[in-house]
Amino acid sequence: MNLVVVSNRVSRGKPNEPMTGGLAAALLPIVEKSGAIWVGSSGRVRDGNQKEPFAEVEALGAGALAMLDLPAAHYGGYYEGFANSALWPALHSRADLIRASQEDYLSYREVNAFMARALLRFRKTDSAFWVQDYHFLALGAELRDLGVTEPIGFFLHTPWPARSVISGVPHHRELIEAMLAYDLIGFQTEEDCENFVSYAQSDLGLVVHDGVIISRYGRTRAAVFPIGIDPKQFAQLAMKASTHPDVSRLRRSLNGEKLAIGVDRLDYSKGLINRIKAFDRMWTLHPQLSRTVSLLQIATPSRGAIEAYGNLQSEVARLVTDVNGQHGEVDWTPIRYLNKGYGQAVLAGLYRTAQVGVVTPLQDGMNLVAKEYVAAQNPVDPGVLVLSKFAGAANELDTALLVNPHDIDSMARTIAIALSMPLTERRMRWEAMMAKLRGHTIQQWFADFTDALHDCQLDKSELAPV
Ligand code: G6P
Image (tube, helix red, strand yellow):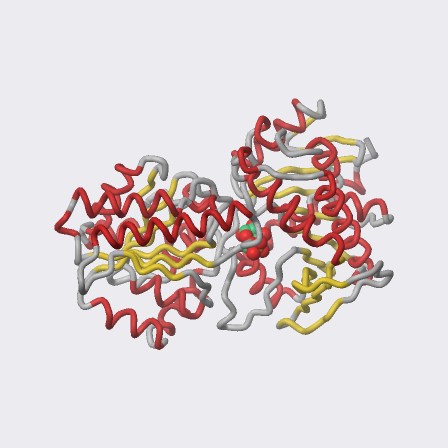
């Protein structure tokens, strides 16, 4: 199978390239090893009506990376507009933040159609296409319109919300009908998959048998493929990173003080405000924890041109200043707040240095930071993961300390418990989580999805069209 992987964001895999989001981090190692071609946006735009889309192609391990310049006239409406101001908030159950104009929707469709035309150049005999994430919900339908009959799969890295929430997206019906051009649609959790199937049944009135949705395109299988990491490789990275200058400097600066770490894109789905309030509460409830523990919060800037993100950035900065002003002392800063991105080679070492990992999103498809924090720990003296029950990762990492990020008091108490957890309990919880990570690696995820995509094609050729 000549696999063509498509996503909006791609990564060149440079060791110090700041990682923005789990998708690029997850796809990089499998593209490098599988020999797939990975097509995505170059981050640049180009004017005019490109008959032959411009792509820069370079080798990436055994595979290749093709970076396309997207059409200038439609990029804003597609990326900041429909994808990140209508779909992203809806997918994270923030219907109140949905903003979309008709022009944004048309630009989104234009860029999906543009990408479909660009992909024809990478089509070979025995090709299969695997489309990633909410930027390209309609790409499968555009490919079918161009006569592509090869298998096309889709994987959603975010949650899929309840019917009532997705119905807040303009043109939801048209878009979800277009998604049924995919042969296989993969979700992170059972709940996401059930929400999608329930929409297809109740709102589109379609028949569903054993996870297969029957539409005018034929059969679409909806199934769950929780994404993983390579825990062995990440553990090695963390060990190596302990000598990285940033990591050494952090360790030296701690002076025996404990460290909690949070690493997130600066996004309203990540629950940053609630997390900072929980630390504020903890230092108020347990004044003896002042000076004995600080929070290192890395918040990578993201989608800054969108109002909701700009507002969040100011709100988080203000809150950090307030909390530091309240609890800090002349020689102690409670929250070390870094508004910039780091590469994985440093992050792995920072995770290993921290006694507590706080991953407390309000909604998250999976959250690979949670998995990476666990994999980075020293087996002899592992840290504790405090994890939101609304992250997809909570389904597997159920021996983390699970929290409700809306309940600030309870989060404050849980962080204090994590800080004083005895070694035997820490080890027991950590080993159980590592066993889960080893059982569901990124390589397994890739193999499971591509095998299922292959099976869909077999089903198609064996069964009469519906
Ligand atoms: C999430 C999304 C990805 C996206 C990433 C970074 O993880 O699921 O598709 O690439 O965020 O967001 P950005 O808008 O910077 O690509």
